[in-house]
Length: 74
Image 1 (tube, rainbow, N blue to C red):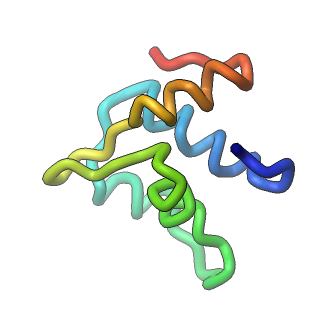
Image 2: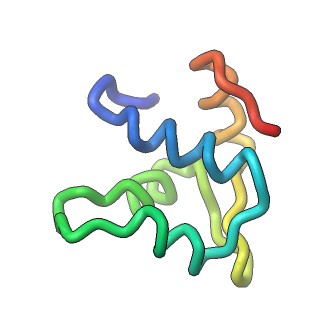
């Protein structure tokens, strides 16, 4: 379950769900210089996103996360 302090993970999953994204695009747009801010890694570790070749996609668990928070994919 998403912790209350993880709204960025929810935002990232929603952003990926809206349109097809490449891994390079995700890393460029969600880049941070803070080693403690691991949004991409946390989303993958929790099973919300997956990388397939060069594409990043929302998993079934990620879709359920969006739905449970009143958000939807495109």
